[in-house]
Image (cartoon, rainbow, N blue to C red; front, side, top):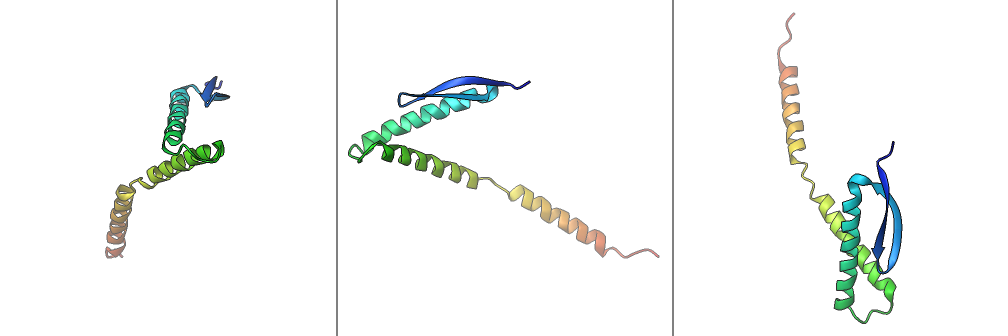
Length: 100
């Protein structure tokens, strides 16, 4: 049984009916609020853009840039250190004299 539910997100007077995992409903609603706020800010900051498409494109690109930045923040140092330590242990084992 799927733990999905149908919700409707409202962005710019557009109703978006979607099916989401129940555990992710708040995430989707928060994302819709973020987009709405971002569009409002862009309209205030750039009131003379030629048409609505520019606001949507700017909202998408700023959101995508934030996502890419966060993805690049993943710290792999612990894994790199663990692999280095394991390599050193393997080298020690392989360097031990063989008993005949």
